[in-house]
Amino acid sequence: MQHAAPLSKLIDALRALPGVGPKTAQRMAFHLLQGGRGGARTLADALTAGLAAIGRCKRCRMLTDAELCSICSAPARDAALLCVVESPADVVAVEQSAGYRGRYFVLHGHLSPLDGVGPEQIGARELEALLDSGEVREVILATNSTVEGDATAHFLGECVAVRGIRATRIAHGVPMGGELEYVDSGTLARALEGRVSL
Image (spheres, rainbow, N blue to C red):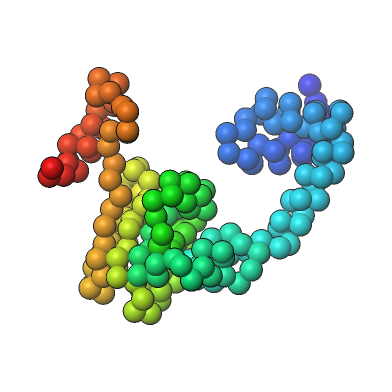
């Protein structure tokens, strides 16, 4: 069925969201236009306000509405410890663990030469400037456990090492409470490589 042009445009716009396919986008559009018009206006206003007010922290590149995000401006955070992550969602995940009290640097992606994403696009120059400031003593590379994430961690690890700063990589392996028979072979191989002494 052919939709009206504005409806097709709305469906296509909703498909830009991660995990939203054509059917889900169509259901969302119908819901917003059918009975949820008040919610649709609220959503549109929130998007407009967010786009106007939210930018990147000048130190760590986290999403914020101020010059410095709440983490970078918190005096209790350990400025000598820097955790490098791929996305703002990764910052939220690490913060929810309540086991980290340092600062962050958000790459907003990972190296992917085939997609035209190189060091400039992930903020390598800004990270190097931060490392050259002399505050950072250890960089925790917390990129995803993918080919691209590993390549990004390797590249950044070399940038860190040439400055005499300690570079570490987050551990990957068997999850807490996980049973070995249900763990995939790649994860198990990583866990064996990253084993530690007792």
